[in-house]
Length: 545
Image 1 (cartoon, one colour):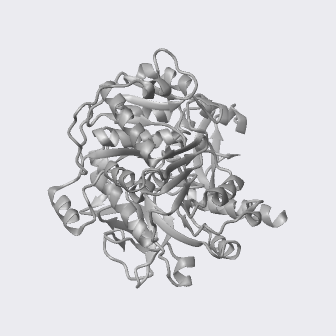
Image 2 (cartoon, helix red, strand yellow):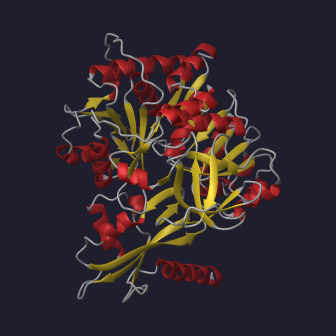
Image 3 (cartoon, rainbow, N blue to C red):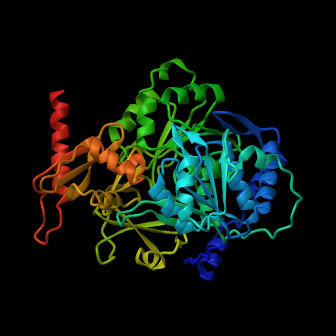
């Protein structure tokens, strides 16, 4: 069982509990409320069916007994690498009930990232699908198991499972005698979710129940969300955006969630009409695809009232187009991170100037500020480093206490983003200090991929930068200098990254072979020059098209 060293203090607990931001409630407490109030209401709709709150609670209880029978105890870690299926919610709620920590791993993670995440979290149970989108997860788990002595069990959701694995249907069909276990506390670690940064491999962000209940309560209040809302999510629920909005928020409200496991804009339009969806959220890419859906004008979208947009740069022209095509839908922009959920948000009734040109103002309980390199406050409208603090903040990076300390100035978290803050408290994200590419809301850890490219014997030097993309916002372009006598092409690079177990979403989508790379006086690659070059070329192609 791992021990979690967190930055949580008695003073923080007292302060945020007294303010009401931390209600000291588990997600299962909200589930119990929903079952008592509306037991026959649909809780989850996914691509394979639907389940009521009464049935959900029964399955959560059965699942919790099964986890205890596998000898999982409070503080043990269960890694969830599942698509947007109801089993994800059942497992997370069951784990919450008995104090087991849910570690979120996106379905797109492959051998190299998966091994790192499982080792870092000391996960003793891995839950996977047998197949999803053509990938064999059982084969991947079998390849890695020898490197993971702490991994005791593999639970497979699907049609097939080997004798060394546990089949979900068998797991849920097996009755176990109830066991009394002490309830966990809302300040215990309940979630580990991985985020990619400029420093290489994924970091494990730790949250307690309080730190992820608080932002969803604030979000519901700011957007006037109610029990009667039907919430749609297509972002993977193994990513913090999808997890908070597709798992935590619906249960906290006692509402219905519609889980879309494979993104398709036309299907979303159909589901809005069929299920009377009222609320959705995602990156600008999801909004763009929705606005371009072929059936947008042919389905009844009268129930749909809110789309919350975040997860990367949001083109202002896209918001104007949304106003024209979906005039009855409020498009609300916001900013946040895996470490702190939705920190800023545009509110209902805000003036158009703020709705269309800012990333909102701080959510209740949160504070934001813009500072210079010496942490001195900057005047309104001046670009600087964005910092935040408040009850939504994570409690540390697992096994990286030094990194956790380095990212804080007292209570203020250094976000790595550049922003301006106006006199009315509205921020606008203007750039990033960290070397990250955000592709359709998915962070690409640049240094991590560069380090792997350097393992290729054909590569002498490499730099990966963002290139603009009208749909995804950004894509990755790799500039490579080849070793003498060696050649590298796009298929060769892709094959190499696949052999190294790198998730496909991290692969550069353009390769530029260079003779030299622009450098500063001390030899550092001038990535700004490379970004400008690739942007100019993209602009030239657009004008000539």
